[in-house]
Image 1: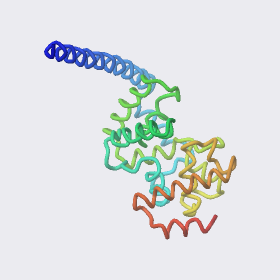
Image 2 (image 1 turned 90 degrees about the vertical axis):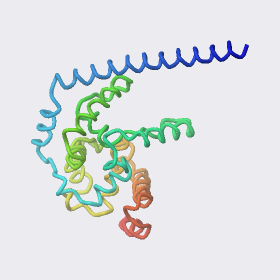
Image 3 (image 1 turned 90 degrees about the horizontal axis):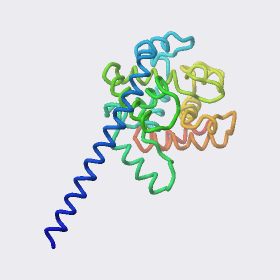
Image 4 (image 1 turned 120 degrees about the horizontal axis):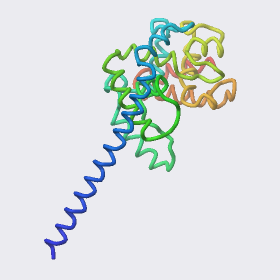
Amino acid sequence: MKKIIKRIIIIVISVCFLLTLCVGGYFAMLGYKVYQDAVNEKSIEDRIDEIRLRENYTPLSEIPEIYIKSVIAVEDSRFYDHSGVDFFSLIRAIFANIRNKELSQGGSTISQQFAKNLLFSHEQSISRKVGEFFATRYIEKHYSKDEILELYMNIIYYGDGYYNIYDASMGYFGVEPKDMTDYQATMLAGIPNAPSVYAPTKNLDLAQKRQDKVLSRMVETGVITEAEKNKILEDR
């Protein structure tokens, strides 16, 4: 009897494993097709060249260091350590969502967010997410981390019709990115997570709460001290 039960368990595990492989392979093929369709329409290189030629494109050297550090802290604290997909953060986000019983965390890296904005629509599907993975791996292989970060800041949406850091800085604060104060920079860093919610022109209270989270993450990751956080907030 024990041998029969053991065989049944082995068969069930084997079937589940084969089904997982089949389903995984199916979505991998679908995702790769989504990725290929996007790059066949226009290559990643051509898309990036177009971004760099846009008016108001801002190089990383003209973006305040405090802004760069705040974006990395709140969006992807392991940005310089992973190869595009941070499986550690992804697993942590899954468990957090299960614990909170809501999709409160996404687990996408800066590289993944850039790949999504560069190549795909905002349609939520497994095949699109897999396609994003292939695009991310290609981008990470052919572009440096600083290049990805710079491009990301020049393509993400900041709300109020602003699709790059220059327009957002000028639109919200009336200054070029390089002239933003620490207070302005850390507020701006929190907006792309949910532009329709955190844009200061929409709801200043929510924008400030999001800024608090950005600054807290900076303290948690050792980017700034609690005293430096409080000093930044003196401009509020």
